Length: 188
Image (cartoon, rainbow, N blue to C red; front, side, top):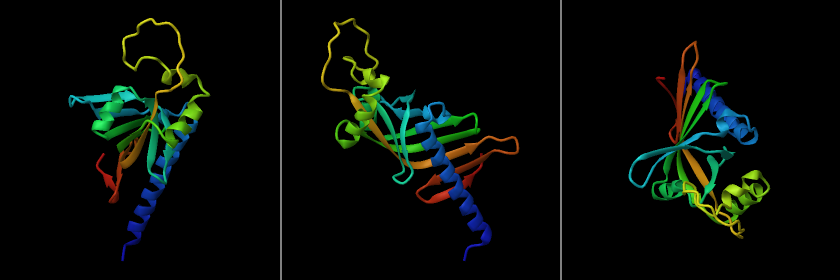
């Protein structure tokens, strides 16, 4: 039988996990939320580290997934298809929280998920980003303006494998890891 303090700690961890997912969901809907633009870190085809700021588009605590949109021609797509393991790093000055989410990324370039995302994006100013004739990172070459029927939107569906949460506080820093084996406090 577990000691009451174990139940209390488990309850605290459950509450913290719920708060983390709540903040992630808030970041999707609130443009000014600090977690809206995390850093995505992965490894490129040459084995070199890469990191870039992305926009969080969906956070699903039930499926334990996060969604990011990108141009299907972006170098990160090739990187993530080759090596789907990545990390998303979130920082909130307001909360004094850092969150590192270890994720496995599935790149989707067609299908229902992509079409639903396109339906949303196509009504925003971001639509031009996914209709550009050249791939991200290409040298700009002046061309005649011409439209095309297809888009280059891809959805990065990131399954959260683990969270590493860190709170920086004057009273003492706290750190907790959440993964498939549960939650445990770590030395900050």
